[in-house]
Image (cartoon, rainbow, N blue to C red; front, side, top):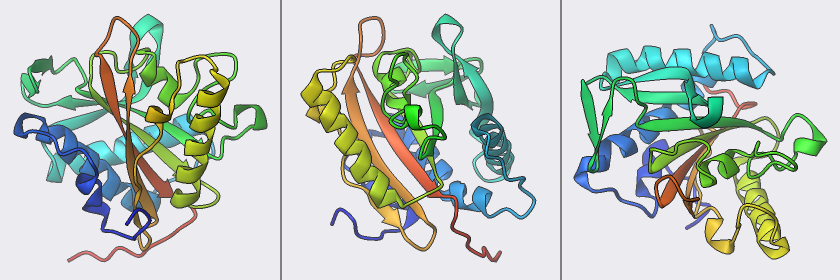
Length: 242
């Protein structure tokens, strides 16, 4: 069922099951999702309202944890993109060349890029920035759809820092925004096909996951799959080792 609470790893049970050569992408998304509540609850973590500093903190945590339990990847803060743009995080393989599908990525090229957004946005005029900007291409989904971010990848991640409401609330709200963009024929060529698919939630951990797929502008991969990974920042959970 769409809103049934499921384990954190249930992101792998969403509609897309990748072939063997793309399993690293799925495993990376699972790794990020499972570590979002661990990062949130880390007593040593400084709490930042500033999105950029929160992204840097998350990157440090994921990269540190990957060294011990997921050594085939490393995380980099602010990955260069097209036209002097930067994505919030980049994920690189640790082999000289990492093969994803038929494409090889060197140690200098991220095979996955990550954008992160606060939910809700910090300012009213940026309310729908998770999806699309008002005057500029500042929307997380919009940047991937236009090929401004992740032009060389076929799967990317958007992390949502949920500061109010729940993952289910934002899943419904984001799809409502996309429906309005589709109906109004507002820039970016939005349609009902851009809406997020079913959500998988872990109520104990305060996380949610969904996915969407989008056609893209000329000059990059024909389509991109977005994994939406959300953590409810107001929740706290005691993690016991062993």
